[in-house]
Picture (tube, rainbow, N blue to C red):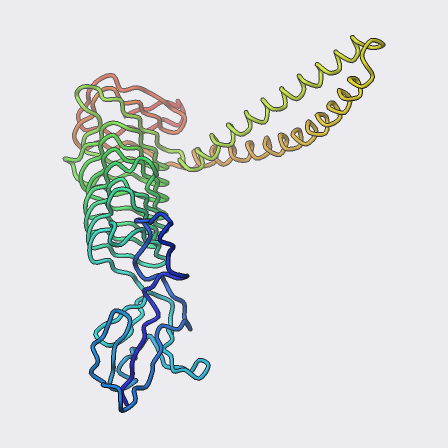
Length: 387
């Protein structure tokens, strides 16, 4: 028996957009992820008076048998007396020939641009192209066969970029596990574990929880700031014109950032406490100085203000004490990490130029002379950087 199939996926939810509203060209035009049990299509049996070879549209097609639409990832069911196709798994639906197939992973055939809009993929995402400037991409694990250019990218697992990562400055590129790329240029990168760069890194800011590894002896790292919980492996570091480059090794960068951010918040609390105390002292001084002369109404108003300020002062004091405890705990974690981290060194296979500011754990130095291949580490007893 022939059926007319109405597809219910691949459309934007909600009513038709208001023509008076501004058009969001970055809105995703890719089918959103669907859940197991979700209705994907509705089947309408064709009567004898309806031709079974009627031409199809983007949302409708004709099948000669109801089982023709079924794949291993969907099934037929009845919903309020209607024959529907529902998904058996979570994933991304598509029409493959005449079958509805739900894919666990999402593949984009081409670039992320105005054709696709932004992409938010809860699972695996393969982009057979590049991520163009201004677009947002989120995924569990992400593979990009092209490049990433000035885009907002967040990957909760591994990220593989066959090309380069360029000009990602407005938003740091965030990777929750390991990152592989061809080269970096003028970008901010935050990686939970390791970053592997087959080429070079130019004027970029990198935070890696474990290692920064430039894979070839011909690779160059110059400019910017690199922070790694463990070590940096590189061919050449710096440039002959002493380009400012900062390297920090041996301290988990995200833990260090938490401590720095917390210290800033602590400074704001202490400033607020000082301002409150200063105002309360001003009120006390005024009331004592003008005693017997101040208009009773003004004295009452100042006493009310002092009461409110003293209540706020008590609240901020408690908040300050809690903040001090948290700061002490963060400092303890940072010291413990440094104390137990024995694998933190700078490995150079070709050349070390001058102008490098190097920190390994708590030891700091500035490289003033060029050097051939060298390995720099910290002498735990003397607290100095040695080769």
